[in-house]
Length: 310
View (cartoon, rainbow, N blue to C red):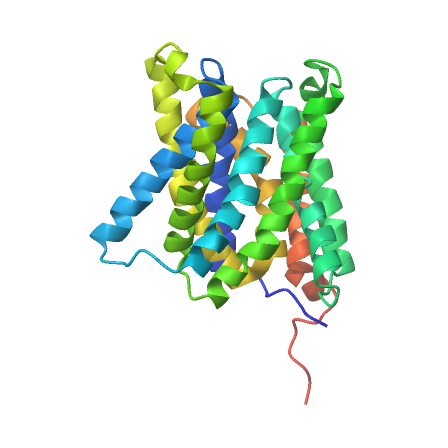
């Protein structure tokens, strides 16, 4: 039975960094969506990020893939990892609070397991992983608090849009693992995916949003778009593909449990926001969930980490 790779300390460090980069994306996207429609925000985000990664690849002397089979994979990955989930999440955030969107986005590991078991039934999903994911989702709900649910009631369609994004991420993680088998480096995979996404978003945004008819965005919106493109997208997806290649889809999907915690901690450290009791309780639950998934603490408690007697 196929097992997921163990998460080493360096892998946890990359997951934490990725959660910080993506945790800030909910705040930045909310700023951008105040002046621009969702598809335009997606288009600008992926296009700027693709240009940044192109410049970096050229500066570092790396070749841009030209094989159609590789670009076909880029377009498929761009569709299910950017175009569909970004559009659904951004539209959902225009209807519901970002906190509720982050809770729904935290279901990604559940969808990752369902997709993996459907497409690769031999993959082992341990009880401690399932328990850890449940702890993590509960922690996200407690961390964000009831205020996230009381913003605009329970609009069903936007909530299903966010869940649809989480399902799309589940498929993306599964298929994104093949990039390593194809010999595609993480930064190259991120560039190809984002370039393909930009190509698909241009006609969509042109037909639906007609961005040339919109008023010029203000400096806050421009700064939010740049932050989304450079950090949450260009750097974020380079790290994402690195994690997929080293620890697999199910482990990488755990970052969605960590994103709300990172967003709350960023608000506390950078903006001076005070942490309330539900924040501490949520962080503890998320931490317990990640410890259960990691498994090492549980093995130590059971005595499996001790050396055997001769």
